[in-house]
Length: 84
Image (tube, rainbow, N blue to C red; front, side, top):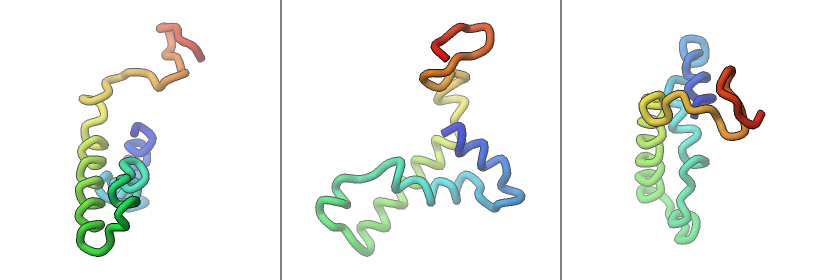
C-alpha cells in the first residue's frame, strides 16, 4: 500500500491519484472468489469491483492511520534493529 501511496504522490504528472490507482489495483488486491466461481458479468461484476475500489481508495487515503510507521515485513528501520 505504501508503494501505491508513493505512486499517488506523482499524480500531478501521471494523473494516477488514489482513486485511479484503486480502480486499477482493487481487482487484484481484493480478488473475489464469488465473481470467479459464479462467472458474474455485467452489472453484478461492476458493482463488486466498485466496492473493491472504494475499499482500496479508503486504505490508500488512510495508510498512516491504519499502518502507522510499522516497517514492512523482512525490513528494518534505522536504530530499531530487525531482520534486514
